[in-house]
Image 1 (cartoon, rainbow, N blue to C red):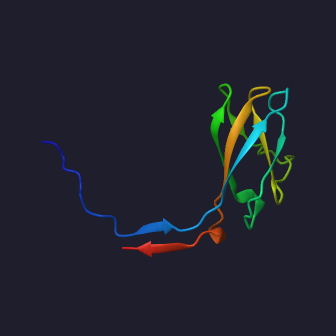
Image 2 (cartoon, one colour; image 1 turned 180 degrees about the horizontal axis):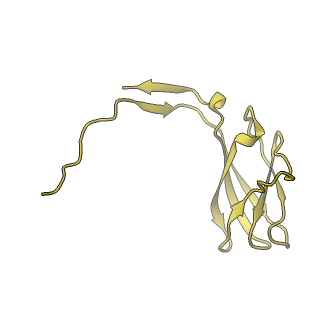
Length: 108
């Protein structure tokens, strides 16, 4: 006999009322796996709280950031990303995951 799925509502939901996003057009260096400084106008309380996501690219590629101890630290208005493909042209969605930048309401 098949198990029935519960149709109960979740007891609470977090609704985000405000957040920060910015789309940046980036052309990566002719050498793959090299830092590219990507400038933005987001205002997180900690520069490390900027997330990124590829929206569109001119070729198959992966974006990533250096996580080594010798990496360039992200600063106000600048993140450093790398691409595994040389000269890729990418539209990147930057967003802030900083809890201080959200106004949230819990509903039941």
